[in-house]
Image (tube, rainbow, N blue to C red; front, side, top):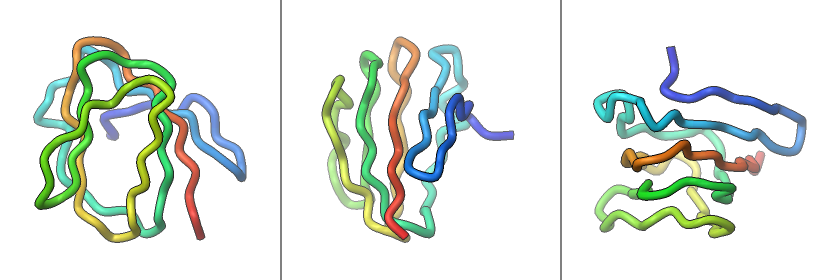
Length: 89
């Protein structure tokens, strides 16, 4: 079971939601096989953290690049978080 729901998946992007009631323990450090650009569509109080860096606040319309195989995590906020994910293959 994943801590998110993919609400729209195409060959170009994924729209993903994280519920505000999620248990923070479910938001684990992880790595992805491909590089990604994520854009925040909405959410309040959520943060993003790359390994060995301080967390960044996730704000609406802000984009973040995540290099392939880099350790990262999302830190729980106080609302629904919706992001757009575009993978680089």
